[in-house]
Image (cartoon, helix red, strand yellow):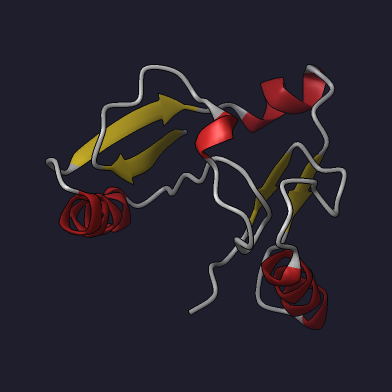
Length: 110
């Protein structure tokens, strides 16, 4: 599967020290399966911080990630568990994760 990251800089390697706190799934590197969504985020970051919109693509194999021992949490749809998870992460104003997942994916909140 191809995933996309929209930014105002080219991403050559993932550096979590640039991650923001208080995000829906915690402090991390966010990707989307929607190229259009990544483009919107890239345009937004360029507008806010300068530069040009850049979309970087990554190939991701969930089965290989699981086989490598990564702990993956999947939210298939909106649910109370998903909402509680989002709220707890948004309230966390530290770089210390409140969960032990390496990868989290699911619907985004507005």
